[in-house]
Image 1: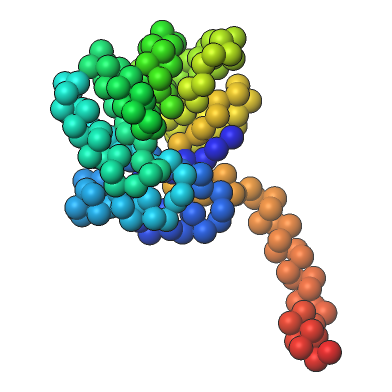
Image 2: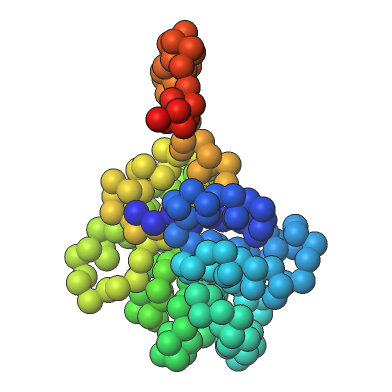
Amino acid sequence: MKFFIDTADIDEIRDLAATGLVDGVTTNPSLVAKTGRDFFEVLSDICSIVPGPVSAEVAATDTETMLAEGRALAKVADNIAVKVPLTPDGLKACKTLADEGTQVNVTLCFSAPQALLAAKAGATFVSPFVGRLDDIGQDGMGLIGEICEIFQAQPEITTEVLVASIRHPIHVTDSAKMGAEVATVPPKVLRQMFQHPLTDKGLDAFLNDWAKTGQSILKAKAAE
């Protein structure tokens, strides 16, 4: 499974990218607005840090303006994936941009039929929002399972399932078990995935035992 980071915070992206675990980034107008910086400068910076897909969302709602905005976004860097909404106009824009060779992320997916339409329109990624479905009492992870089952049964579909609106590490592991190709996670959730109390406890025990020996690996090596 690929891990994308759902943020426009350059410091967070640079820090997490240094782990080698970040395959891409997803942004949206709200995330970029939080930076207080120029939209295109932020995108350019992110693309220079992360070589994988960087989703940048259009702000228009009609096809022609979406196309104009999408083409402008695609010029920022080769790894831009233009994000469009799952609407009739958005899918028209998706089809055209995909035919032009641009990666497209179709966002705001909340049903399996919608995901199938995005795939038919040539989307590189389709983004079902699990957390938002959970918030209204629906089964977000059930939707991921349904989409994965449909896509796996249709070998001509190359669209990747990009699980979005992730709230905790269990969303990530469940998505991986279902066969989703990508999880886009907030930085907080990715950091939570590193953590386990037994890891901390074990490391403390090892360090305490080593300290009792009074030895230093680096000093011993330097003395050779």
